[in-house]
Image (cartoon, rainbow, N blue to C red; front, side, top):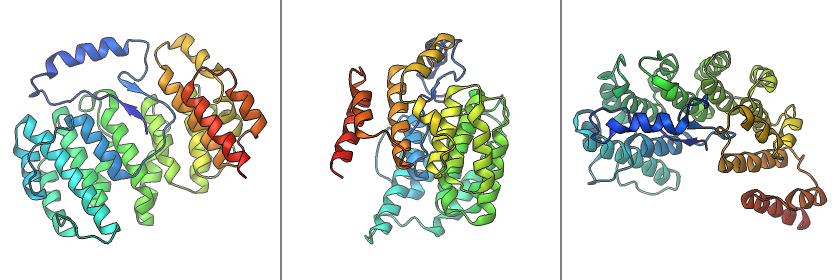
Length: 336
């Protein structure tokens, strides 16, 4: 999963006043992604992604346990703390409900299609989105609608891809929507899935490199010849993270077109070259995660280095996480 740092857009947060300046200083003018650190991206399940984003957007504060309907009311009409508590509680309740149903257990709360009209009515109160302060709540409600099988939730997420810069500074919610749509794609009906695919392919032409990266990631859940052709076109992108993420998405789809690039990503050389022009874009933890993901992608394609090559790769490497992943792969090869 991508590593995300997000400023809470709600100006009623008493701590928000000093956040913007600090964040801008921390990311620095040499970072094309502002406050976004981008390793190779693997798209998670939609509800898991929404849960993680709610932690970031609303600080993950857990308060009293209310019913889903009470939480929905608080999301719309509560104060700052009430809204973030309720948003987290509501998403958690949907996750618990889905897990209980999948395991044949009785859920604590019944959150099925009968809850959709209330979600739709709540989301309608925020349409059209005209201010950054509405984005977090709108995104959570639309994602929950889509998770529960409501096509209007998908439409709303597609519309959020078109948000103007003045409403979505830094493209944060356009990125979240692209990731949500990619995560949701396998469960969509064919017409909706095609709408999502077309929208994400269109995003590849964006001048916003962050949006391009998230579109590349979202397409890894949308198999098809058109998807493969679009991703292969990104293998020549000028940005390392876009090229490498395209190779990773192709690998997820079982295509070997990015094989050479994934092999290159195992070494430190490409990251060090990028740091010359963008010193902060590839911090060590992100490099480590990206190298491990590249190794996993090669293994999924049946193209991982053999045991001897893996040992040489691990020998003298200063990254303990990568070395651990390589040696685990060696052990797996030896056990065959």
